[in-house]
Image (cartoon, rainbow, N blue to C red; front, side):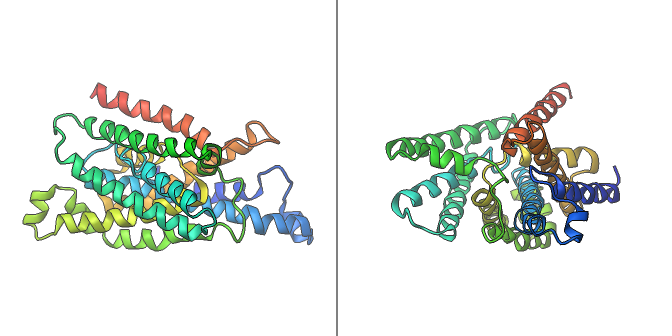
Length: 315
C-alpha cells in the first residue's frame, strides 16, 4: 500500500473515531449548537482520538527502534521487561506516596522502566547468540519475574484490583484535562527521528558502528531513555497495549524494508491506524457496552504475531 493511501486511511479512521460511541455525536448536531454534543466532542472524543494516534505511533516506533538496536525482530517494550519495570515503579509510588500526582507516578514509571531496560541490556550480553528467539523469551521471563514481585506487593497491600484496572489498556476514561501528559510523545518522536541516521548505523552492531566513529553504548543509553520516557507516558495515560510494538514494526519491515529513518514515520502511521481500528471495534462489538482496547489488540495482534512466527519458521 502506498504511503499516501495509509495517510488517507488514518484520516478516515480518525473521523470515524470522533463520531463513534454510546452517545450520539453528529456533524449536524455540532453545527446546530447542541451543547451536549459539543461538550462530548471536545471533552472526550477529541482527547480519545488524539491519544489513540499518539499512543499507537509511540509504541510502534519504540518497538521498531528497539528491534533495530538489539538486532532482533521480536523485542519490544513488552518483551524485555520495560513495561513490567514501569508497573513496579508505579506500584511502589502508590504504596509509599498514595497521594502522589500523575507527574510523580510518571517519573517513577520512567525511572524504573529505564533501569529495567539497562539491566536487561547487561543480561543480554551473556546470552547465546544463535537463536533470535532466545532474547525475547529471556525478556519475557525477566519481565515475569519483575511482574511477580509487583504482584506480590499488590496482594500484600490489597492493591491488585486498583493496579490491574488502572494499567489495563483502555481509552474510555480519557478526558480533557487528564490526558495531556501523552503529548510528551511528540518531542520524544521528533528527537528519535533526528537520531534516525545514528540508530541505523548502531543497528549494524557494536563493533562496526564503533569503527565508523559512533559511540554505540552512549547512543543506546540515550535512545532507550527516550523510548522509556515515551512508553511510560503512554502506560500512565492509557495502560498497557500488548503486541503493538512487535507486530507493527514487523509488518512495516515486511512491506517497506528496514531502513529506520525512511520507515519511522510510516511505522507511526501504521501503529496509529492499527490502534484506532482496534478501538473502534472495542466500541461497537458489544455496543452500547465497551471492552478494553487491550483485549482487541491482544486478539488481533496475537494472531498476527503467530503468523509472523510461522512465516519465520517456514523460511
